[in-house]
Length: 116
Image (tube, rainbow, N blue to C red):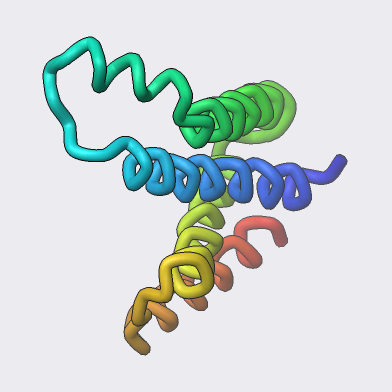
């Protein structure tokens, strides 16, 4: 598979892991140093989904690093920021400023230039 496609998948997994982490923390409730709190986290399936997503991103990242130049692969990992912003807008109904959107466009332009 070409580097750009692999990087997009890896960035999606990374951003998904962050989104799932936010859902896990929301479902976790108020933190307390008790066995009850930690036991309750064992049934919080968001943690499992988060871990699977991060593991998948990590394994794919190892494959990318092994098979492609670091100077091309590493800048493409910034695509996770783009997907994170989209998730913030769609899933968490956050307001995204115009300057943040300009930043996302600059990241995308930079990724395009790196792959040329």
